[in-house]
Length: 328
Image 1 (spheres, rainbow, N blue to C red):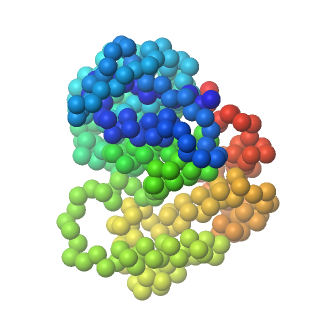
Image 2 (cartoon, rainbow, N blue to C red):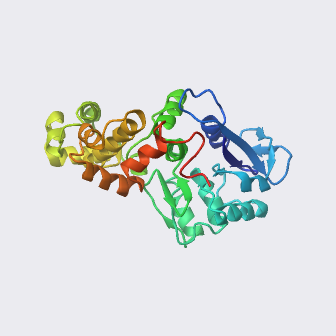
Image 3 (cartoon, helix red, strand yellow):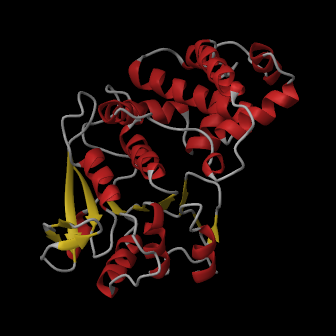
């Protein structure tokens, strides 16, 4: 049983509570998803008020964080409000025990108040990035990322990026197949590429005719991942010059075409490593890496593991039930 602690205190956002509950507490996600034990952890046992007239009833004290495999802090309605000192102490203890700790959206301010983000990278909603940097100057605020990790501390951008982070944490602990199953039950994408930059307010473009063309290019590229695709190839499919295509692609997705392609190749390789016994060179070929060496280099850079270790961790024949690479 993988134990997840939802840290509750007055002022947390109900949307983030719902996301955490949907990912780790709803159940019924289908085959391939492990059993989770989600607990609502708080300093006091009484109902906790949330914006919108809702309340949340805790079912465990803060001391339960010592038993958790993952700690998650919902976003805050007012990030400038002080977080209860008992909660800050509990978060410090959890991090000292090396328990992975995640904060959604403005929940980053709780980790910052605890001093956990000093000297570390973090992200929050793009509208709050300057506030986080101003209130906590020792934090390195990443203005664009959907989520970042630094020393076992995870933070995410606003609202929907909290879903991205939660699914990523499932993927990290239990594999891409488990994250995809939960995403399907939530009717959402298992992961989004790009950065928060794609959502920051900009002047409305005079025409959005390129959006459909780029979507078609991405769909076609997914069917041809095994081919040695180049930016020139993708641009030709869209009927654009490589320079114009790269500019439109980046403004639409928040990432470059080559970075997007690499993300898709890694995701495809993860699925094959989890679902099949194909030899490594064949996995690399089908996903367009060209060679096992190249695939291994990208896995090390992006996932901090090797394809063989990933298969051992997440293939049914090589991963003992209930174990997890990020569980303590």
